[in-house]
Image (cartoon, rainbow, N blue to C red; front, side):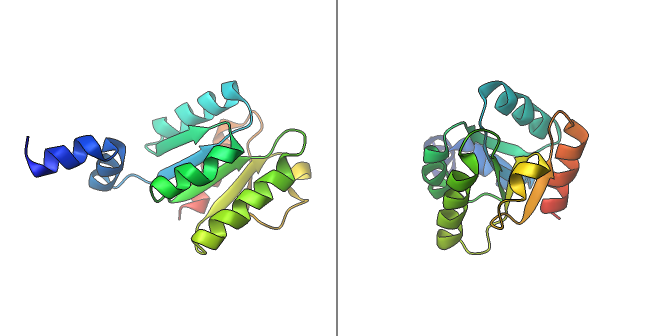
Length: 137
C-alpha cells in the first residue's frame, strides 16, 4: 500500500474525498435522531459532506478532529439554547472565524446572539437548504 493510500485509509477518508471533490463540510448537531437523519439526507443530496451527532457534548470533539465550513446546531428542546450558546462560544474560542448557525424556529433562536444566522427549517426542507447555502456563500 502506497503512502497516499495509507493516509486515506488511516485519516478519515471523508476528509480527503471532500477536499478532492471541493465539497463543503458541515458539522450537524441535532436534537432528535429522526430529524437529524432526515436533515443529513437532505444535506447529502445537495452535495454536502456531513458529520452529525445528537449530542452537544460530542460537538467539540468532532470539531477538533477536522475543519468544517459550517456548524449547524439544532436548538429545539428544553434548555438547548444556553447549551448551544456555550458550544458556539467554545468553537469560536478555538476558531474565531467559524461559521455557526442555529437551526430552529425563530421564536426560540431570537433569544441568542451567538450564531451567525438563524435557519428556519421546521418542516421546510427548502428553507433549510436555502439557509445553509446562504451561510456558505
